[in-house]
Image (cartoon, rainbow, N blue to C red; front, side, top):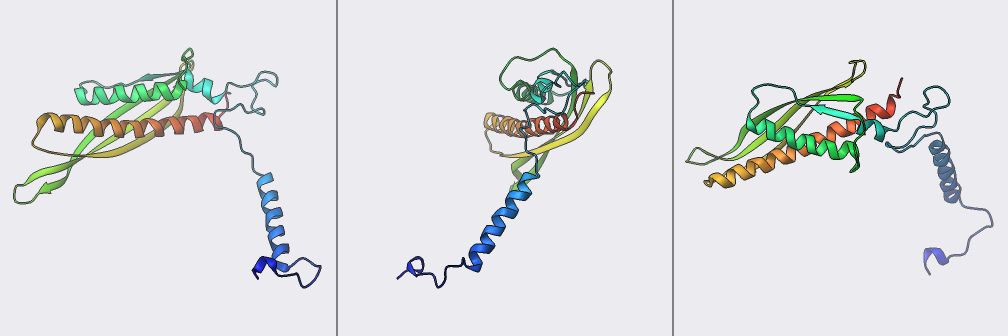
Length: 200
């Protein structure tokens, strides 16, 4: 006879059943106090004048124009900035068309390459680590007021061999991977900022 086949000793619910029910009720009450809403949704309580609803986070993201200031940047940094731009355009527009620019996002990019492995007896590096450091400033175009600033970084490694072309491709692949991580982080942080800061 299994545990579930045993007859109950009395008609009253067991202590374990009562405790389980109380836990479920308490959890439901706690969750009822939380307010969940989609990051890219509309907040019905965020209005500009009581009648017109504020733009959605998605619309505000689609109204961002990007700039990558800096002079004398290497071709590597320029290529990385292009990857960042492409990733952010897709993230901001969600695959759709952009809107007239209302915000300006300036991104400064720096790249570091460091040896992470050296072949024994040959003193030749066998792997490198690429680190991208970015600082960004989000501002309102109409007022030129700074809205949000932040930093983001990411690292990616690649194996180094005796093949020059293979090394070049491997390094570019590591740069691309790091740039995509940075772009995703910047996108998430700006979206979170817009979600918690309605249009004034």
